[in-house]
Image (cartoon, rainbow, N blue to C red; front, side, top):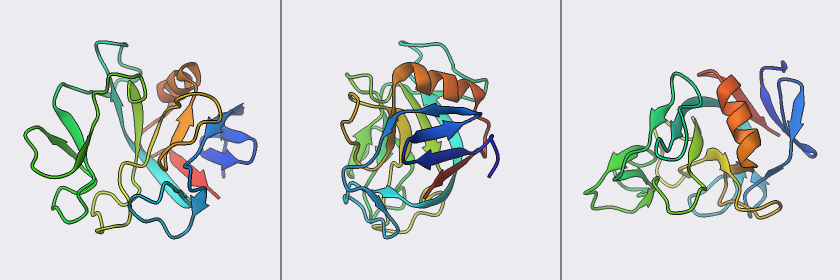
Length: 164
């Protein structure tokens, strides 16, 4: 491990010599991730993208991609686009990335079960804003808005996310 790795510890997410309080999946941490279990998958993951709402903030990094109206994330386990960004119209189950609440105003995408997703092993494992301190996610890592912006501005493609 290096200071450039994001490391989930019992005291929070450690990155670049700082520690940030965070929330995890309501199902805890698991080595046997399944779609819908609410758990955060254990392992060494990588940050592969950054998405942001351009109507709510400036790009946090030069390589960040804006979330547009109609952008979705497929959670349809049997579909060829499972665990991928898709657009409306989309006939299968998917989560809207452009939400009314601020949860997905800024999203760090991980390579959990991506790019060659296996059916049922979980989708949309992101690092995003938390709802409120201590409120669990559906399997993602949730951070305070300011902390997430600080991290996103310093994250590079391929940054390791270590969940023990």
